[in-house]
Amino acid sequence: GYFLVHLDKVSNRMSVNNSRWVAWRQQGINAYVMMGIVALFLTLTANVTFFDKATEVYPFAQHIGFIGSLPLVLCGVMLLVIVLLSYRYTLKAVLIFLLLTAAVTAYFTDTYGTVYDVNMLQNALQTDKAESADLFNVNFILRILLLGVLPSVWVAWQKVTFPPIKRSLLQRGLTYLVSLGLVVLPILAMSKNYASFFREHKQLRSYTNPATPVYALGKLASIQLLSLIHI
Image 1 (cartoon, rainbow, N blue to C red):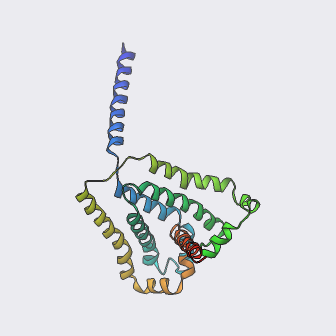
Image 2: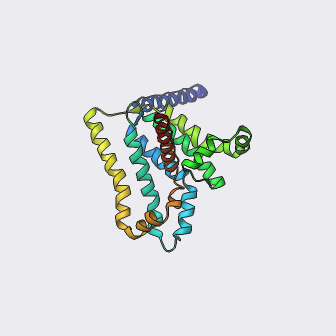
Image 3: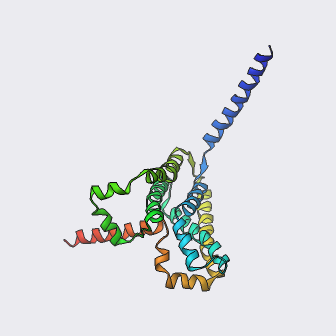
């Protein structure tokens, strides 16, 4: 009798938990919340080398505020780009593209110090199969799985909700304000540091992922398109 009563209690608990899970799954995740989560994830996982190089140029002990503000600025830039590109039918595709691109490019930046520009991408396209095979190893596969494929599966699996049009416009506007605030406020507060950062350290900025590779890819595509037009 005791066993049956205990089993019935366990069954009831499982039923309640399952109902909660179904309700949560049906409710979904707000689109703008997802944008923020992915922007933060990309900032923290794809820019290890950038932050490391930044502390070499700006020693942490002397530039605590500036170094601490860099993740905020970078996250703000990522969020701004994501919001500009993401709408009801493009959101998941944009996020998955950025996640997979960041996982691949950050691996080569962290492992080999690769900096992405138009010339580097052109050389990569000309790399033969034998050279490419040498670059793919267990560490590469694990990195792509953990930081690219699994987050992309999470994005694809989520039920994303966009609010009604008026509330969606309000939330989009607030997200723009948050992203701009993350970028502008630290720059205004530490204008001297950021002036030297933008004026003197182009090489350092080129370690940001996936912003630099995506920009270089877009520039390369425009060059290729212009060359086809003028043929």
